Image (tube, rainbow, N blue to C red; front, side, top):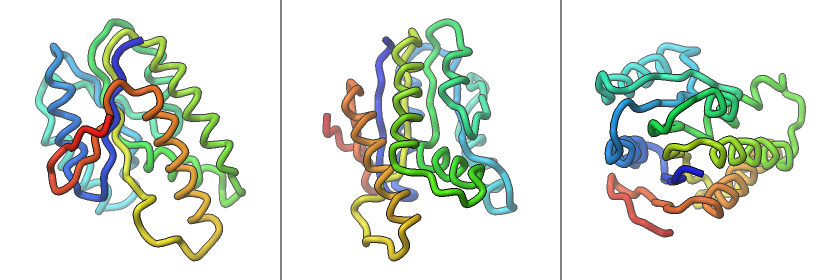
Length: 175
């Protein structure tokens, strides 16, 4: 298994910037595994901004629903930066067309992702939003989403060689 590194933090905390630097500790080329979808002007603008942060050594893989398959399709040992778990889970919820998805569904998906990471020879860096430090959501679906993200972080951190909490642009190593 290649090295797994997890970056978590709040919105606009600097997670992606820190993850890009981590990837660039390794030789190019690099893969940016995007889970975001440009479904509106604001999201398209965010995607364009993120693309501008990366240089010509980056290859973008778009996989909003099955990042594990994207990783499994890669050969070699180039660094892969997956950004991000929370958008991936949001995409899965939207794809379910308001059908209830239990926390276990998401845990199973993360386990499949981890299996793909274990098989990949290069370093994989995963970015995700920390949602567990905020208020308890009022509706059950939002609580389940928050819980699924929390469980995903535990599974990913359990197998990661390094875990960083990014606060105000400063990555703090917690594992």
